[in-house]
Length: 380
Image (cartoon, rainbow, N blue to C red):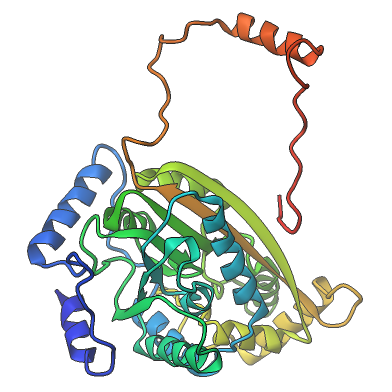
């Protein structure tokens, strides 16, 4: 119960958490039941989390504490991703009275969840960093002062970890994670924790950096190290690939999984500005097996030169950096959800079905099917 003890120690600086008609914070018995359910589901050939951590979570917590002091309120990348993520709520008919916001760009998500948007009445904001929690509280107070007439949902703040959510099973309606889950050591387990916290037919909504993110920086650092040091050590953290996203949703036992991708190319005056932006977002590398100490001076200068030479910004001034963002949607299983019919229950053959479609296309009973169109502003 280390997470519970940490929260108790910090409760003097955080708003108290109230009971929202049900127990949101789990006790030891619930935690044990929750963990056993996750283990049972992951059993049967699926690889368990090995216990070897890829990321240093304490270092990442320190990065987020530093980022809270550097955070820009108008960061174009975080603003755009948060808005596009929440746009997916508008595609849902269901309402979500109790919402959970997890880490990452949670402050940007909270700013875009006024009272009543998709039925949201209560928000539980969870972050690993107390400093980020304070920043979210300050921004909420500023929003209320800027526009007293605008109503906002009731918000409760918790210092917690995505890999061990302090939430009772089946207690919330939607879990929203914006650019935070890519730092989880046990990503399938973290997503399974979110699914367990959802009520039946609850929504899991996440945005996560994909494997092509910062590909230019990876290449430039590798080229410079190989030239100056005769070998390569990773300075950019690994990320999940798009092809893995659907499997992650399925492993977490989320139904009706959907994945789509955006790719953003941002321009910076130089690699130094790129590194500064990453720090302000809390996205500095936190590899547990990282080489201690920064990149050597000669290698750093060579990396900057390689970056500017290989990946100039459009127009030739500055550099370009790619951010690939995967949007993942899944639902907590429910009997009300559509399911595939039982095998052998069809009452028409494929040949008959094809003949019907062909006759409709010739103008018999309806218009011919049209090709889908790419929505504006979305990457394929």
